[in-house]
Length: 122
Ligand SMILES: [Zn+2]
Image (cartoon, rainbow, N blue to C red; front, top):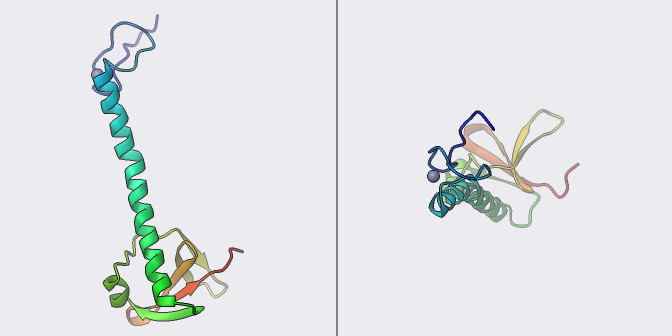
């Protein structure tokens, strides 16, 4: 027999009965599964929503151009959230672009931003 007492994954109470039990009952099982879902997929979905929103904002400024400039104020006014991005790209000059999918921006002086679109990753 195992020396340690197994505890319920949901309420942490010691479990009695079958050795392969993980929960006291269905209530604890459901509780645990709901918590897992809440702490796992919901924030992921939210972040993806923010990223998609950011992407749309950048695309809106860019229209069909390869690059354009705008201000922090205008980005924020459109609902852009600077904390959400997918990756960074550093060019040969050492400028670090911040990307939301294929759209990116480069912070310039005085709260201006250069907005770019990358056609393909290289
Ligand atoms: Zn329990």
